[in-house]
Length: 356
Image 1 (spheres, rainbow, N blue to C red):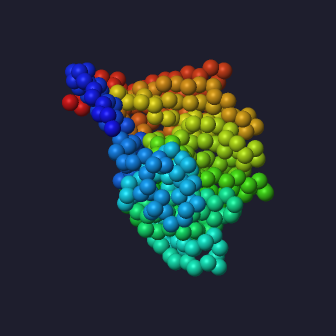
Image 2: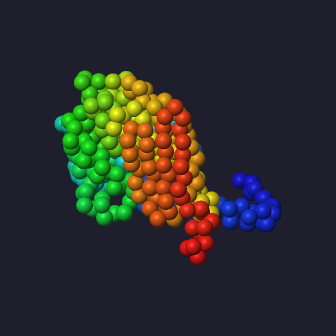
Image 3: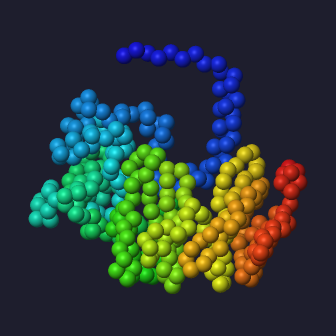
């Protein structure tokens, strides 16, 4: 194999490194959205073998030859001789309970149980409900029936979740509380099923260990308006979507937590955009709602000091809303024929000077 030699001018590299360090430091909160704190970064993953047909270690470690050949057809699987980091087309699932694993895709076949935490699930299209399971260390392999997975397998222990300090794991408690109140939801491992008056929708996780892929959670329910709030979690960061239970489609996309007025004809959402040094920019989106249709009427850029904490967002009446940053002040918004913003905030430079 030929070696590639690259000559580097280190001065611009140092400048780039400093900029990236500053920028990435302020995005730590986004990284906390990852479910597992030991999740490998893209750079770390690329140090391992990327799947190709010439590798003869990987197929020999998969007990089912058909599954081994199926995996080798992809180009995005990542593995070493003792660990799997990604399997293209699978679901990387975090198990928190005991799962029954069968020798074949039949409940009559020999079986055993496992509580292995990190497993890959490969859908068997010819056998509805059946998935082939491979643990991330190759040790556990076999078939599982997805609809037999327990609630605990997905949500784990609520008290342990609260103590974890992990953003995503805490969100598991939020979804559990919602689905416990409404019988339209059914959670079976990586599959969230919604049955609203006979209209059935399945949200199936697609995260498999690489930066692409999505995990889904329910964050709120507005059943009286035939809507729910869905969170999509990515490799870095999240977005929320208002999902219409009648149309089976998103009616409002890429927002953060929504705040509706009492008449529910307006909604605002404040989303993180980017950080630079001590300044953080947010996107304030304002929507007019008419018969379930969300029309974005304003997208305001708001710059605040990174140390400021959002106390609350409160509608004063159907046309006025206040964004409260505590000691740093507030932003008042009036929505009518025109939209007006009243910024009652400490200047960022003044705040920085007072803190030093």
